[in-house]
Image (cartoon, rainbow, N blue to C red; front, side, top):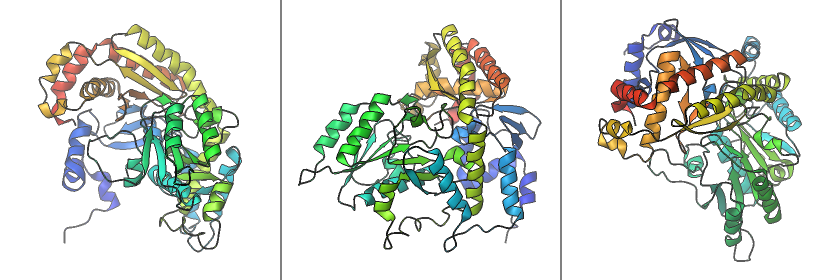
Length: 476
């Protein structure tokens, strides 16, 4: 038998060896994709706060915020310490037939922080699982008597078969099967929802809709629901006894300037809230859906169904994951992460607005809240016509090809020239995302803005030409 790698072996693997193993055993196209941006050419030695240190000693400013995972930054010391204490005590992980003090305390903490009677929590592993668990709860609440679930045309709720069928943007064009009864309304359009609900009735004239799922702020497209829309949705769901689900997997824990984005509107309470990403403090794969007490108790609080939800996953509420989430939540509250996001916005928003004004032929629009902003770039100058002739024809069939190419050229230049790590979303209009961790200091935000300014000052023709010459043939 071929020798197996040890953990120590992993520490000494070269970049070339890692690339080879990825190509052989993970996904060779992933290697081509990521190295096209300059990423993945060197391995990471360590990471702390908003900085990544590569093995060659280069320091990189991480302005991705871990795509929502790293509100606390890399390796927050309090979170590391909480995990270490758990390990040193040799505490027990599994609690299937033992009650977990960590799960109990975490549920209490969420109930204390969230408005209304959002008191009942369940802790699966990922955001997609939280969404599917929430939809399952809504279906069970109605005892299977209703058959339709509504989601918006602009949405991202995960990539599992169920959550994928509730997602509004297909990233690849390949169609997977999904859950039945999914109906689509226009994001932010209350009349669109009302029309759907009015038409989806049972033979007795009652509503056939068991749940409506919405992201108050769509982090993958940087679209936002108005207060009027969200309150109108709440009123409609109350009147029709429809379970209202808010997906704040990305936007939770202070990212947009309030603990959760919907909490900026006093008295607004969904029936179920989903959260994940930074809920695990950047070190733990944990998510949650938190339900209003009447909804949860109707669905599961009886001797027949008490274990129906908790047996859906082996790794529900593992001890170290729950401990990590407890500490992550406490840090977010005690260090006032919503205020930190607002402090970042006070520098970031005017800085991005200034850059947009300075480069009107490059930047079409900037929008966002707190530490989450999208920079939307124009589809490009005439040189783009020439550049597109240099790439394989199959790539240009992507309707978002131009936007992806332009935004990729900026991401590439920021990383190669300035050591600034950014990304663009795969949904919507593919904006360049400016989403730093909430531990970012003012001088680090200013540094990012200066680097973005210098990058855009090169002009799109130069950025595009350089990017295509480097390795555009391996994209998409």
